[in-house]
Picture 1 (cartoon, rainbow, N blue to C red):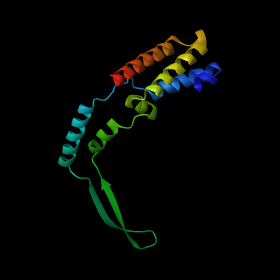
Picture 2: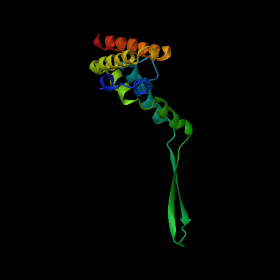
Picture 3: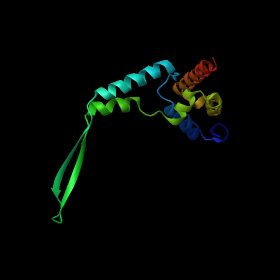
Picture 4: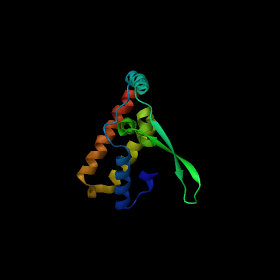
Length: 146
């Protein structure tokens, strides 16, 4: 859709930049299932060894003079950091890495079509980034097919 109906230079450049941003960081690499299984197994063992988060409950006096309870959940910052580091991938990136070859092809075709529509006004940096992404998509599709 973007490749077909984007006519203005600013729109073309914005779409290319948005797609490139959604797919970063490059390179796109297929996750090895054996390594992922080992990581999950070690994560499950490691989480059992870690301390449980603590919950503190205390009684407080409310503004209207009645009593209430307040529960406070305490977690160490280093416990939460690894979960965020693994983090969520962008949906487009996750689909491409999972092996959606048709989507991979269409992203490559659409970005190439947009670059050709932009003509010589496109910066060399943007052209190089699209070329790098196209090469990554080709390699990713080749890895999934073998």
